[in-house]
Image 1 (tube, rainbow, N blue to C red):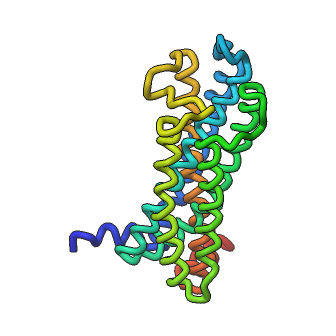
Image 2 (cartoon, rainbow, N blue to C red):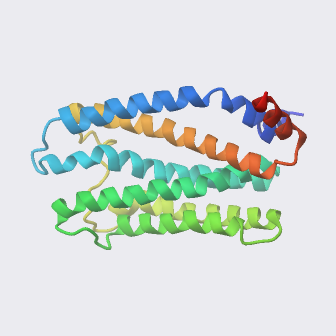
Length: 245
């Protein structure tokens, strides 16, 4: 009885109809935050004393890279919930999260390369953090591909969930790489208070905006996956009928 709330939350029909009302507001808030943070960071934050204006890519790169790591951890949690409590929605959201996380990771790699060219003199180096981020990109793709690799969807879901859980080790490596090995990538700056407040505020605004954007996209893509898998259910037909009226 005490887990009834979890099973209700894990019901595709309940989730679809509940979250649909929130999505327009979430997208609006994300847009405003990212607009304010990006304009502030690119146009009004002071020039860095060492990197000049090239550091401004940080206001895009850092939030996107952070969300890529968060997306993987959340995907692994969804996989674990699906394995333990057998909730169908968890596997649906895990599948929606994989390509979305891969997209964020790809943008993080591209923006990191743009930042690396003027900073290190090269678009790409086999740095510990950069390499582990590339591995994260392939892990996202691997989880997505593995879910569709089996004719039996349950087997695919379980295999993908196990891979996502194993891959959490790589997220730990990403976080600790700048401490464990000599690396060109700069160490964590925000938690150590190494970022000036005039740069920190727009950066934090963009990070918050990126969180909300990621969740909005995750919920939207999950809705698409729910409709795809539940298309023969009566509640989906009822929704389609209402939309036609």
